[in-house]
Length: 130
Image (tube, rainbow, N blue to C red):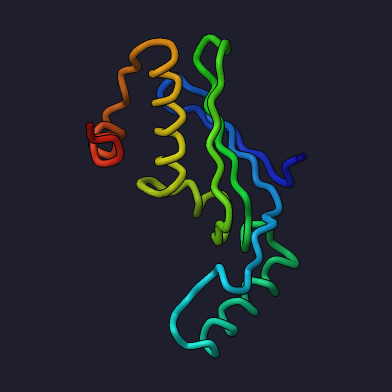
């Protein structure tokens, strides 16, 4: 599956790749369940309309982290993403950070212990408590 949009950022010595794909999860019935079918339909119609011009309206996001020496990568996927753009998705403290952290944990478990950057240490302890 070829990405529609790609981004690359550096985070504390790691190269993080963000690939955005079309999402095949149906919008209707998965975007929102408010208890009011009329409100749900309005929200779903809005996303369907925005999707005609913006993949971020309903996307499958792939994040993969390249180890500093390039020897290993780990990836994480999240479907049903509804954002304005890549910047909105990558804002600090959101799913992007969770996905990067998940990849770093996989590398850590497979190869060696990674010292997590300070801005992720609090976030890390919230996600992965033993």
